[in-house]
Length: 215
Image 1 (tube, rainbow, N blue to C red):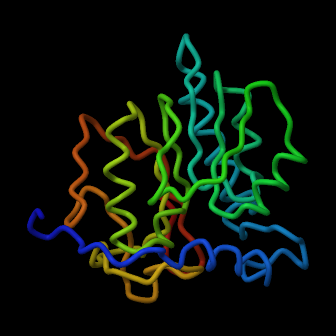
Image 2: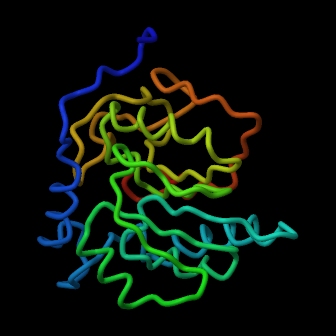
């Protein structure tokens, strides 16, 4: 085991049950909506700049990419990007949520899969999207995710991190919460993950009212 690598906890991890509880109990709001992935997936001030940036990137290719959206949630954001992909594979850990998405969202190039992104194998593709997903996972699970990134050419990652100085990658128990209460956020390029990339770009930063920011 490499120095600093998170120790693997015993499986199964609590992530699936925690995420099912989020939707069953409307823990991220939604005014009683059966499936609601939070204001981060619905507030126009957050969603519209994100969609514009990602759509511009995807549209820049002569040959459209196969996109894997790992943690698609209620698909309020992903539905705006399907048209820019050769194939759009949307993944989430909650079976009932995926069943609901399949019933609502239809396109010839769209496919939904129910997977645990830490535990299960990922579909093949060119580009991976993770939008405010890793912030809810333990370091052990994030490490499992990072190992799978190397099968893809492009990674589009969004995280909710504190503004100003903060200590990266403090561990948490998987669930609805994030590292913000610990003045921490996910940085995959920092220990213990040390993701190796050929090139990186920061497209967008959106300050939030709670003193934290997206991207």
